[in-house]
Picture 1 (cartoon, rainbow, N blue to C red):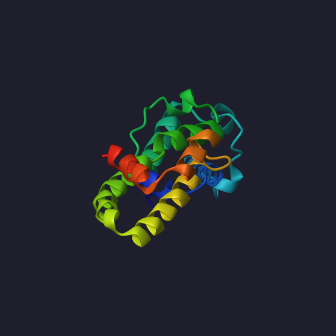
Picture 2: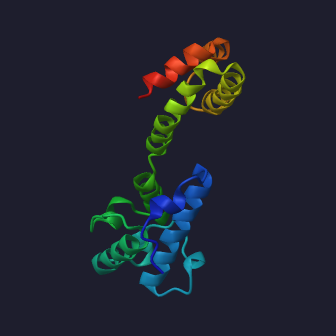
Length: 170
């Protein structure tokens, strides 16, 4: 069955799991094109040429993957990415979802609510604590984003400074 939106299917998965899902998808499509019983029969590190691919089967695989992913793919796909594993890595890169866009849109919706808390010390403190926790997820150990010095600055920031930071995101 076709999976027309690979990006949606991969959204929220950690990179290792994402790669496994895409590799399985490629192996299954290769199995269909070559007439194998299933994707587990396809060695992801074996070259497409060794697996028996020619120009016609390369186009068939591209069509299979286009139908399963919804991605626009060139006819040279198999020749540009010589193994199922290499092809899976490429498809994974094409399907990466822009998570920052929806997150920023969510902040745009939250900003007026946060601004309304300016006179509510208890509510402001609770929201500030929640914002610190969210920022910690971005800047904590192993996370992309600010280093320890920026994280320390946010821990020291007042409610007004955090609200100003949110206003700058608009």
